[in-house]
Length: 427
Image 1: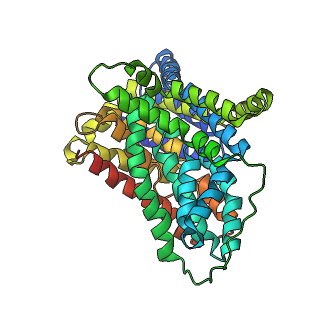
Image 2: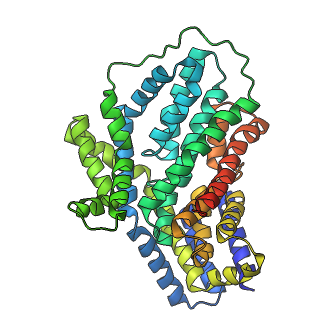
Image 3: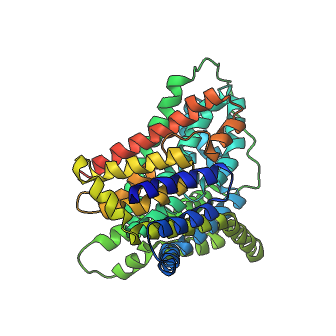
């Protein structure tokens, strides 16, 4: 009976999202109704909702806010655009896909998906015009790079939220995510478009895109874009050394993502040499841009806690105990099904988290569970996903063309992500 209630709850969530109800309101309403129908007293339901919101945001709200500030500072300074120009010059017009891919990875780490897409799409069109190549041939590498960073890498909301829920080490999650991201982005972003898009255009002899004189230097651009990743990875590696040594406390400090991001914001303020007033305006705008995402994550945390406190997670674990499937595969399957149903990658991941949390164990470390759920949340994006429509409209595609390009690319990233997680679990 409890499983039927869960399925009806997911159906209700799907209907509400389909009717354009705000995901935060939809998740919160479904969480409360699910708890009540599962037999929890009203007071316990609201206590679970409060605990879920508190435990989820308590571990990540500063990481999300500081990450948003960092991304907005990089966007407003022009560092993202500068990186594009530098990599295009370095790779040349014949390897422009690789330049766009690496740019997407670098820009996608500090910027959230929508912001990264909006920043890079004009440059994709300019490169396509300058080279004579198809916009999709240039654009898919950008979209694939942004997608893998969105699904696998902190400080993006999904991975950060899952790391908090699963009690995973964010530094280790970031390192594993980086190991997966580059090969997956190359396959989905470079080789996939070469298979489906005819490269019958003749490359222009000159690749020229107006760079402008108001952009920061190369050093400033690369340092600010990659600084959070460098600090978190360095802190995690330094802190993992078992012996005590002078300065280990510094690495322990840097391994904390809140500390690393705060330090990154401060260093970026000094490097960019913009007025404090302007920089603080950028920081405020950055936080405003993710306010709704934070609220959605909070409501997802409430739903997660309802599923845990009602025993639904254990029910799912017991029902799947005889399937002889790896917990990582099972988590991917559950999340992928929710992604196809609900559309939003973040909502799908948060909804799945309460069901798969009991599956974490020796055969499914929490860091790899984060990546498995993250990979499942990218599966088969279609008409109920805003990313699908954004890609369709910007590239002026038909529905069939969008399924053939965007949906296929997202599915490739998702499936390769699962294979990559399973491979990492063998070591």
